[in-house]
Image (cartoon, rainbow, N blue to C red; front, top):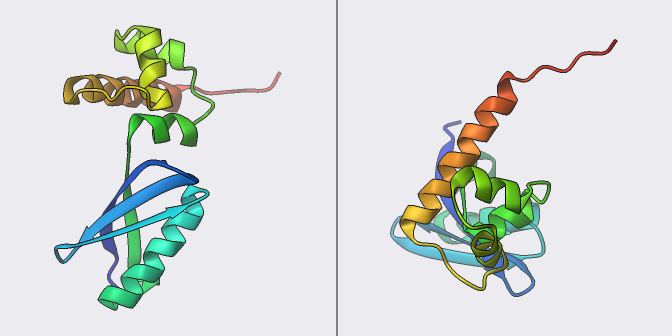
Length: 128
């Protein structure tokens, strides 16, 4: 079975997370309490409206800044801001949904997270 990789945009919802996919030029949206439920609901909708086998769907997740820090709540916003060269108060406003970052700011945040993740991948932990 061929896997269909579909971009899923995740944003702040009224009751959790809101997501949208564009498939065959059809915009499909849904809201759920968490990311796992959102993915299940969208797979059901893709099956109902586009006759896509839910087992064949793999989502390429794209987060707004609010949803990113909600999903990865272990991230320290002040530290990420420091490494990204963004004022911590401004990043907290982005993360709370009070303000929305420009494309340039989003790229800074994304590049910083990827750089930090690369450093983490190289880390090793050992027991004495």
